[in-house]
Length: 46
Image 1 (cartoon, rainbow, N blue to C red):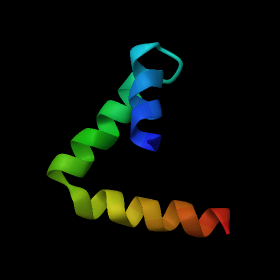
Image 2 (image 1 turned 135 degrees about the horizontal axis):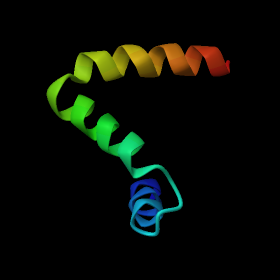
Image 3 (image 1 turned 135 degrees about the vertical axis):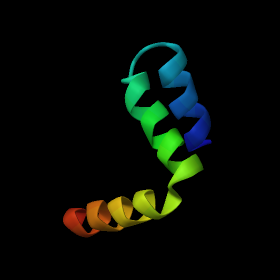
Image 4 (image 1 turned 30 degrees about the vertical axis):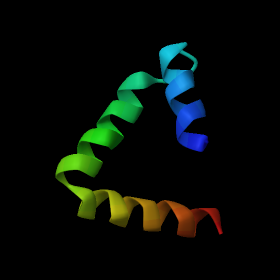
């Protein structure tokens, strides 16, 4: 459901599509980088 709203936002230009495209690219080709970045990001939030 969250993914759907994310895609919906991209389609309607509410978010920076390039940002999500780069995340998708990293997820597809370099998932280990995304995992490290997400861990860092979530620990920053706590």
